[in-house]
Length: 157
Image 1 (cartoon, rainbow, N blue to C red):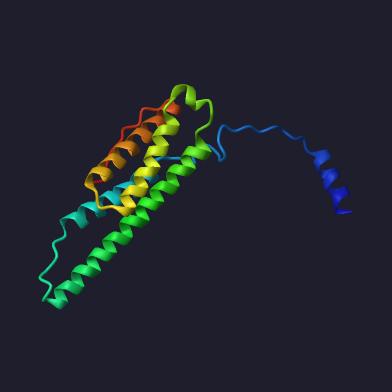
Image 2 (image 1 turned 90 degrees about the vertical axis):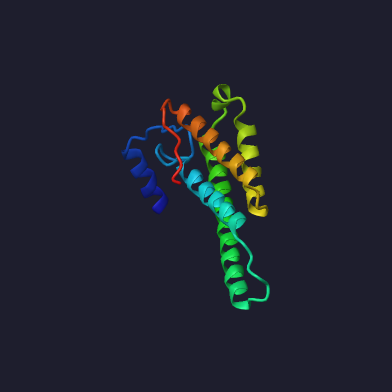
């Protein structure tokens, strides 16, 4: 009975074909979320590199140091992982085969950028952190160019 009602309703309303170039509606995708997460991971990398361990005989200072260090590390890893997830969504859901004509290095850029997210997670390397931000800028530029928009890349810090 429900199936017959459904068929009647479908027959009463005209059905239009809908097409989209990506998996979500326009305006859903934006590389800004990648930049924010990557920038936070870079910031934590800088803070970790700048930390100075106290004298090992000062247990209170050592506890505070280890607490701060572990918090910085947790945030760095969380944000680098988030940047990677956001990149993967943009790469696999927004960019389509026709974008490869305009950006033949698209897959290589994303592949290397996601690998840099992993490196930033497991290392304390200012060099890799900067390389990650350079990749994020390149992704930003490709994304906005794919839309025909000139959007300036900026950093919050």
